Length: 91
Image 1 (cartoon, rainbow, N blue to C red):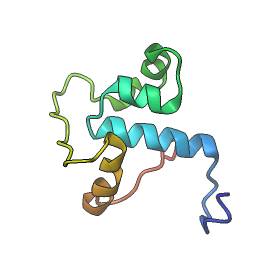
Image 2 (cartoon, rainbow, N blue to C red):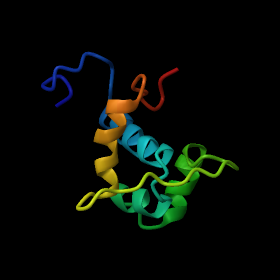
Image 3 (tube, one colour):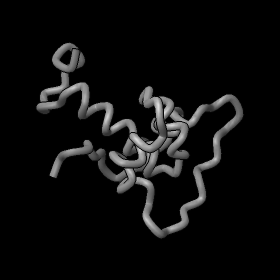
Image 4 (spheres, helix red, strand yellow):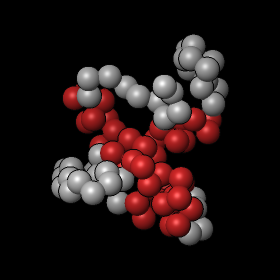
């Protein structure tokens, strides 16, 4: 599927999943929402694996959603303003 999309980097479906989660969490989306999106039965699973993307001690207000948007829609807006894309797991 990755090759069919024309992506030449050595990405895996798991890497794309991690990237999706890390971008949402970095944007201030609640951990419980991200956990549900990933299909975790318990939010502690997401907390264990993605806590580093939750912002630590810094308070960051969540990015407001426009009418009709869901948190995953933030990714489209972030890609327009982000200086460069980061794939989770890359150095």
